[in-house]
Length: 346
Image (cartoon, rainbow, N blue to C red):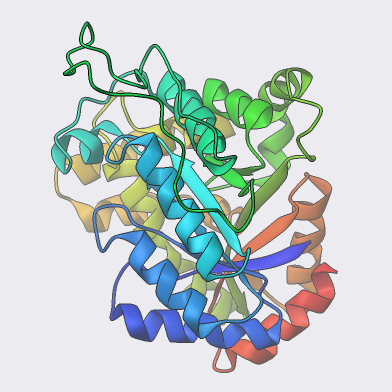
């Protein structure tokens, strides 16, 4: 497995980028840049390209609603040229709260939109005249609400590569099937290796059966908090520190009935806990929501414990199909720990 890490949403972008870039020499091979509804991702990705020499730089994620497909292709091509072929375009649907609440765009047909975006991005990178019908009309015709002056255009710039890896963030069965069919990589969240075959196995198999022959095997990106602990008290404290994040996603990243993380945890077998977390969180009882996160779920979705335990967890991720271990490093000497884990994962 290769190692990756993500920059944090919060804090100074320059500071978090430099900390992530410093891990390049220790063995990190990919740095992911989130966006959500904070700073834009591409600006920080370009800054990372200037700070680094070898690591791949991926968006995790750019949503498929707030930028046109052509704009996403321009971003991928620009970053790939700037980094001399180190770009990964991570895409996803996000969710209705962000898409409608922050961007003011209807959260409509996310699966079809994702498929159409990927198709147009790949056309653009091959410098083909852009053409699409359905969710997007390229070129836009007079009948479709345009002036009638639009014509098929290809990208003026010459991309560094004619293809840039496209990774899709996906959790639900249909989304995961789509990722396995059309993407170069799949980025799940709150990945639990022991439950992956049951929860996603059929979707991955169905998508793989439709996969084009010119696509490489699907990369799978998953991991969690990485922290070596030498006592049960240290383990408990580290896992307690992970509670707020899980409570936020399970309880607050979506309304009742439209929270993909709630649905996933329920499919893992923690449905009762998921309901309790969501009920508390939506009632603004955040502390109670955090306390309701099962310790077992925290344990199995992170890499926290002794070195031997972490080695075993790495093996579990590998055995479940993960090819890129994504780690959130917590250690007084992050480079030392990353170097060790890179060896364990190789």
